[in-house]
Image (tube, rainbow, N blue to C red):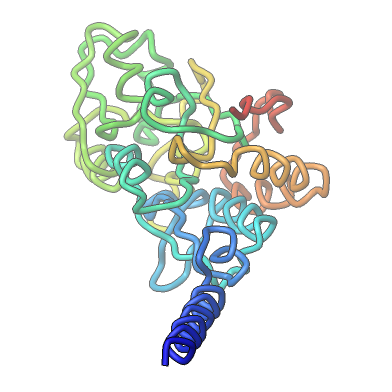
Length: 276
């Protein structure tokens, strides 16, 4: 009786072990099984991260797809998640996303909460104005003007720190800023030059606005990660491979075509974040 009982227990243990193995009992097994990867992007930035129905387009999206593929996730395994500027750290800290490609400038204050790989692009903060505007020629001509930017963005923080005499109007998204600019509610919009070029070049906005073309900062776009992530080095390797293959330039050219945008000589980036 005792032998039979021990045999039954051993058999049950073997079945349980087999079940755990087949279900994937570790993160490595989960990755090999091809589980989805959740990637945060912007949904409202034409040419960078833009959602149109079920279609996602833009340079950030292309880089995200390339990196995900190099990490073992085919395109059908990617779940894109909206990552507004003010929510990015929280999305990573609470593991609602695995990575963020959303014009996410690497800086020291953000590094206190999240990790970064990259950068995969270096932008510069600039100004967007109405096409007939002649009085705004750069950040030094903003005294007394109403300037729109997005809550939680580096651009808004730069204005608060470095530009005096301007009235900063913060909105949740760039579409809100564009509405205010078109109707005269603000005099200019500020964010990164490549974002502004994309906004001005959309079919609905052609001829209405212009980029001033006087960038006044350097904004390295990184891949946001949870601080516990171990993917940093692999992501940097994937970005370098995209650059070396020519796919990086091909995507950038395609997504800025017709905008008049010319990337600075800082691109493509030459150095990446050191991975812990």
